[in-house]
Image (cartoon, rainbow, N blue to C red):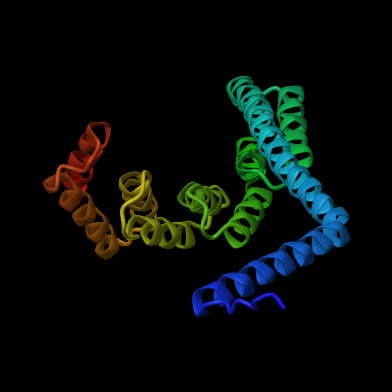
Amino acid sequence: MGKVSRLSHKQIEAVIKRDELRDFLGEAQDWLKAHLENALIGVVVLALLIFGSVYFLKNRHEDSIKAAIQLSNAEQLYARAAGSGDASAFDGAKSAYEQVRTAFPSSDEAVAAELGLANLLFSSGKAAEAQSAYANFISNHPGSPLLPVAQSGQAASLEASGKLKEAADAYLSLANQRPLTAVSASSYVDAARCLEAIHDTQRLKAAVEGLEKLDADKMLPDVLKSRLQALKKRL
């Protein structure tokens, strides 16, 4: 009989590991065959998602450009209408703003177009309708950077409607907002005009003091400094 050689402990471990590896590779091959179709589908779906994202971003960029161009066209038409007072020019500007809102409803340009329509009503002499449009804008877009402009428009609509006390309140509220906005200084001047007209001397002084503080802080535009001096002389 041939001599039966005994395997050492290390040799036994090597055989076990070899058998385990063979079994693992066999199982992995079977799994791959069984799941290859799903794996390929997953790769295709991922590729489609990536392609779709790129396509969406590309289209979003193109839509932004188109929206900006249409808004610019509407603003130019509005400027012409405001300069000429021609009714047909106002109609053209209104149509252009509405096209921006319809074509790009979720864009920043649509928000700007909504404010443009309110401005258009004000410039057309429709103060009550403009006030309502500004109020809707303020309610619908509380976080918009255009909010101070809409608030100023609402105050101006009140003033144009002869509601001088309410207009002064609105102007002062806007002027006292912090941080300061682009219309803070002019709002003090507008408030002073209304307060002077209704002979509210006490609050008129408060408005002038607000302007003086802006001037001391070097935040009063040069164009308003002469207005401040004129108001101080009339107090």
